[in-house]
Image (tube, rainbow, N blue to C red; front, side, top):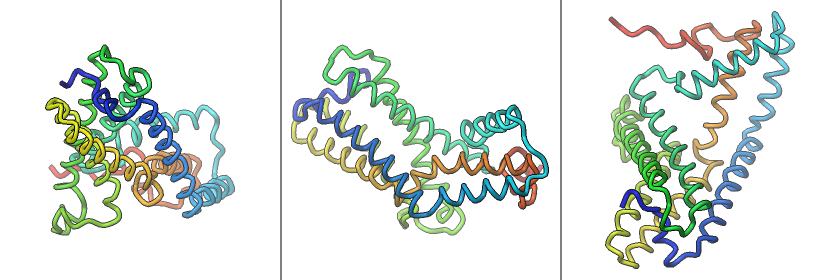
Length: 256
């Protein structure tokens, strides 16, 4: 089961071209939602003003090599290893979700566009698709039930949802129903296949269509903010305390 293309059963009631068109629409929805969010919050204007202020207030000019090195450190720390999280559990949870989500997305694209109705799909692709989903589920449910601020520190019920939870709820629902759909296809029940595939598509649409109102777009903003802070710290234009700037040494030492 976990070595077969999970999208082939959907071709019994949905032409492969429809699913391909759906994915294209979701990519466009993410782009449009991010642009709309930038415009609504004036984030692009903020970054432009911040860069201009940084250039004026800079104590020293950075060379191209220095800027490249800072960008590399930002990529290695804030992007690749989620170094902005001081809490180890939150960092591990975030990394599981991030890498699992990327693995799930990449294999979905390959399966849908490369092997839309091919029963001889390389077994490694469905395996990686499932591994990605399981990583998201482990990291996501761990975060949802135990690590959210209002749950871990305020003592609220994990079922108390606010708009900030839209992304994590839509993500978990989407990949959960993706896995359920894959499992129920074994029974070859057409009605069950349609129902769970429909729920998978419903929550996937909510996930990718709600970018402007969820934390989805933060995945694009956070590296940019981290890079800007590192550049300001390096050129001397930062007006933040050293402990509050992005980078190594930001987290307080662990108690011994």
